[in-house]
Each structure stands twice: as C-alpha cells, then as structure tokens.
Length: 249
Image (cartoon, rainbow, N blue to C red):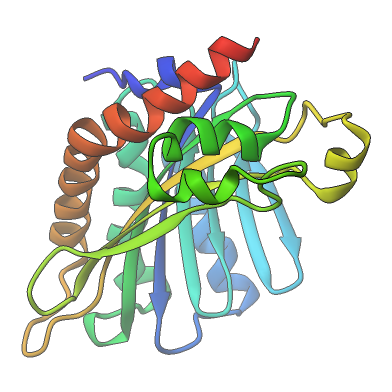
C-alpha cells in the first residue's frame, strides 16, 4: 500500500527506537557482525559511521530516500526517509527487531520502551511562528494572546502527550516544531533551509505481568500511528499547515 502522506509535505520519515535498561554491546566484532547482517539483507546500506557513542549504518540517498540503523549506549534505532509504501517503511525496523535477541542479546526484561515516530517536514522561507499561529490557533483562546503589539509569537512549538490506555503504558506525543529564531525575526530575513516539522510518536512501555514481545508491540504501534494520522493528524494539523503555507507563497 502506497503512502499518501508524502503528498502533504516535503519530506516524510518513519523512525523506530528501542530504549533499553542495560547498555547495549559495544564490542567491535559484535557490532560489525550486526551491521554486516543488515547489509546482507539491504545491500544498498553501505556507509558505516560513528559519532561519539553512536554507530550508524546508512544507505546512500536514492531519489530522496534513505534507510538507516543506529546503535547507541542504551538505544537502538532504525528508520526510512521518504518510503514509497508502508511495507518499505516498516520492513527494516522489523528485521532489526528480529535480530536483537540473537545478535545484541536484547530480551523482554531489558526493554524500557519502544517508540515509533511519523515525521513530516514542511519547507517555508518565512516566519514559522506566524504560520503555526494562523493554521493551528486561529479562532482559539490563544489567538487572543497573540493579538498584541510587536513582532508576534517568538517561540511557538505546541506539543501534547496523550494516554491511549487506562494504565498509561501506551502513549502518543504530537508536536509541531518551529525553527525561526530571534535574529531572523529582527532582520525579516528567513532561512529557507530550516523546515517546520511535525512529529507523531507512539510509545509502548512494558505492562506489569506481561512479556514485552517486540514484533507484536511494533505491529500494534504501526496500526495506532496510521489510524491517528488518518483520522486526527492529517485533517486537523497537516492540512491546515499546508494550506497556510500555500496561501503565503
């Protein structure tokens, strides 16, 4: 199934992170074997790099698409930029999850949380705060606060965290991030390389008395994220943002 979200933004990405209670292996041979196994499954992932304590295997960008896997001290990630389908977006994270018990020794008791993020970037060479205020706060009580003399909102990056079940073990965080800084507002000259970003993250914590089965948990989070995007985020957050940007271009 193709992903329609790409048509609403300039870049769409899917990121998965597993946070662990114990440190992940840092042994050279273990990590190389892990990354080589991934490269065997995904031959275009050929660039291995290191930044501080994080090791990352990247795919060279192909027509704007890029896949990656990272291992840090107590966090492992995998993701895809501009996937063409949900299958393409989810296949690398699922493959990495399946390797974890055998190659990195990650077990159910070791899981602190599993995160799945759907992210969107919107290019706009103007005041991000004004766009967010217009698209998401117009007609609200907050809009009255903005109606004051001056340059307007200085830092408008709204976010909310929701509980998706009674024990609060499944949560969602929705955030919109502005990147306009004070210097740009003073000068009236805005950086076109800094996008407005929207993030929807669904997170699962372990539940008392239950094993943390990573693949079933990941599949459930995928379903929740798609449902929230389709029913709530795209019509109520994404489309107002894209319309506001389009009206100012």
